[in-house]
Image (cartoon, rainbow, N blue to C red; front, side):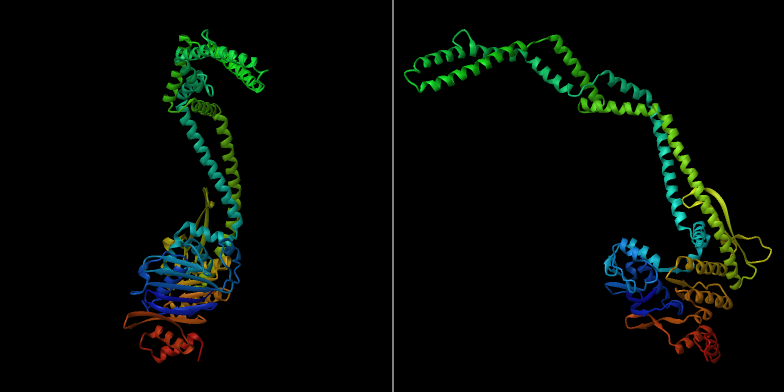
Length: 553
């Protein structure tokens, strides 16, 4: 419930602080006095995008702050999910808009995004304006009304989850079919590529090994010459390193008995000889390993040429990527070979989910049919009371293809006259009749969804005083059911039924025109109603009539 509204520097309002109470309240004022400004301020609180043009001329920013009592509406879970402080008795929403175009929003002093503000606003206030009557023409609105009255949110949520799975399976099937068709169109080419790579007998690491061998064989003569030179240096006929080292060791050994320190050196010389002899033998064996075979070199060259050609053709860097490509091509061909089986499996999944959706949609249809019957009867009773004695209101449900909302197409059919076939309400109802239908619907669904605050913006447009009185009675009843109902009206018959009466007016001062809103006292209320009845020239008869409407002496 809205308990307090503070507005500063917003359009024609300098500063306004006004309190609200539960029950049925009314707001009146001359056309252009600023009633729409109040709605505009509340719309900002509900997450509507800000317009810097709404800032009062000459001011840097505007501020809107609203206080709500939400203790009766079990909203702790919403605040927990949004990571917001929760104060059930005083929930404060603040919106600031600066002349630079920057907008900030806060809930209980916590910064929030517009999406969070909008979601919260939908739980707190429902503003019914004249343009909202156009919703009556929309099939999705009519369906939502039936669903609200059916009280089937869990069933609808379960269906939508199932439908999403079905829709995803349909997309999967379509994607698979497209992929298989495209693959089959390229099947011959894919098989040619796969066979070409298969015939290449690709091996991991082969290219690097071949490149090294090719490099060695290409320089075989140079390598062998170097190895032979080393071998001759170690053990050549003309005093090689080994022969000289052997001789040195023998001579040192002859003096070891005379010069004991030489024994250790002789052992080291012996170790060096053994090590160098081992190196010499290794070099000799390597000389034998080095060979040059023009035929083998040609084979390696041909193999590398094949690998390089394939890598260039398939735009890859090495044989490992060729092997990976071969695997992918093989997988594509396997998919083509198994496509019929895959299609059957995917189609079976689609058929299964479709059947489950149809069964769940049938449950929705049953619930909607029951709700439609109850809604028809209740709406007829309300509309008869609102001055349409011969009303015929019928909710037609017809089957349609499965959609996210089920398999039902809803149409509200209406006739205000005897022996006239009901037609879609948007085609045959007058503006005043549509207003009464919408009020009746709001009265019913507001109880079902427990909206804390409902604001009717001139819903009485196009109706007579007698009908307006009956509409006010409905709003009175709504206000007595733990709800806050506020009506912006230009008819005294509605204004008189409010338990609290606010007046919006405007006046000129040195800075320009400003709008004000005040709560009227009992005496002021009589004068306001008299003015609404007779105009600016208030007559004694108008005063008496106003008192009669208010039920006071």
